[in-house]
Image (cartoon, rainbow, N blue to C red):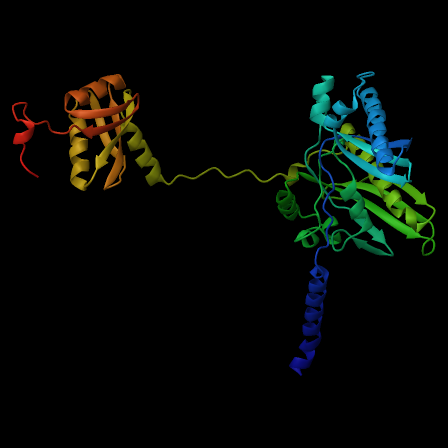
Length: 409
């Protein structure tokens, strides 16, 4: 009977595990942001160009869009009329965004967006980009549709809208997760209602953010394929604080993407206004706790104090490299350098038996005087200053011994 009583619990655990596995199965769920650069964007440029061929018409339309967009951008930046040739504009334009286009045999009609490189435009117009941006803000796009709320549990149209929005011109520094990997587990609908600051700090630290913005959309459809109404709410912080609401509507389901893009733009303007008014501000409770002061054991403190008392006052520290084929050579070299007048201490700090070791020498005087004293004692000294290399000078044969009289090896 005990087994029968525990069976529902076991089945419930299996069902929960199966649901969690199903939630994260199915491959990629996320949508990577299209563009997070700070390029200037001029959108909604309408062109209508005729040419002998379709390709020539399209190229002409893009050239015309660049000229019209450049005129709008210079007026927006307060630089007046600055006319440039097509070659110079090609160097400033970083991309063309096609909103809508119709290509005919000899005609091109389109609505385009033009992206200009911010650094090059600033250098061309002599404008310093001093716009203030917020601290990094993590974005959790929440969509309610058909009575179900989702964040990154699955791909949503609201997530796609935020991914394709160009955030470079906004004063808000958005951090937009792609929704892949562990994003669906860390940032789900339950996380929006969680108040635990320690868990929020863990999530924000993972994505390099200092606070969170929660754009929410409630979608309602009158009938399948019919009008769609979107109620957009701006919220922020781990307490899910309310900022404002906007309601937009399109006539049919085909305009859903346009509806959501407009909603993203309206919420971005809301977040920027809240940032300027101080409604969005830093939260001290999300800051990591201060690191505790290091505790030094009494034994180590006494050893450090004794070492400080024993440390020589004054003098010049010279790093000396020397050959150390064996332990005896180390002791002999330390003794030889300690015997040099003016040397207060000589101790090996990096030992390499069979190679080159390093000795720390404290010398009262100029390092050049130490090098001269070593050369006078038969050492070869290479280098200068506080880092030298010493070798024992080779023994010289007596001058009266001829080359032919040298002993055979």
